[in-house]
Picture 1: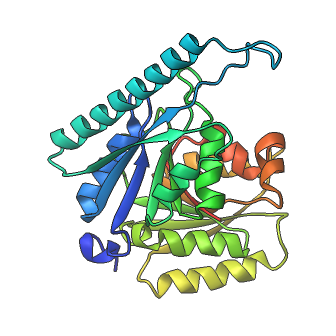
Picture 2: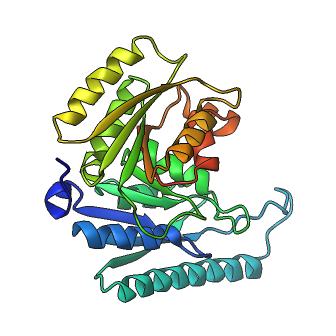
Length: 286
């Protein structure tokens, strides 16, 4: 039996969405839709970025007028984003909370982490290559690895609502993947079908761990299917993405893998590949 509705999702009582400065703001729309469905409090966080001036060398002073003007523009952009989020919520008849937060050079997203660390779920939009958000990958890393909050990544060209029917869990038998599953459980209980995908060539005893996961999920009254697939030459990340697309999945769960966060984000890896290429919402936890 599949459980749906507010009773199944009482663990997610407080959500935070990082509001895109421009574009369609699909992440904000999805957050509003999800909060409405599960009765969660939702906060929108719009970011005012400190002016970044790579064109100037360390030897050349930066004109004060330029810095003041850039700072004022950053704050204006953040306030417009906050207003856009509030309008999305108004149309959906959802009461929300909104904050504008400074992002200062050298601060390491400390303000964002402070807002996120007491949230049950943070929602962040994928960076749109045609309308880039400042430091989006670094922001995503800070939320997942420093605030240590489960994070739902939303494709910039993806759905504006949370479709929960078919979930895919990318499983390698590790502790990080298990943590992601536990974090996703309130949303998994909204799903009618859960497919656990195991990519061959990963960690030892994965199939046994997959059977254990199926038992765990079945105890939560979930309809579970285990699938073992062969890794393609394009790598594990793309193999998982292709599988989810072929299966018609609505969303995905995976651990934020990687021995080194820096290596993952600079050199690539499963996590980075998913972040760049995901066609559907992905819930990650570390």
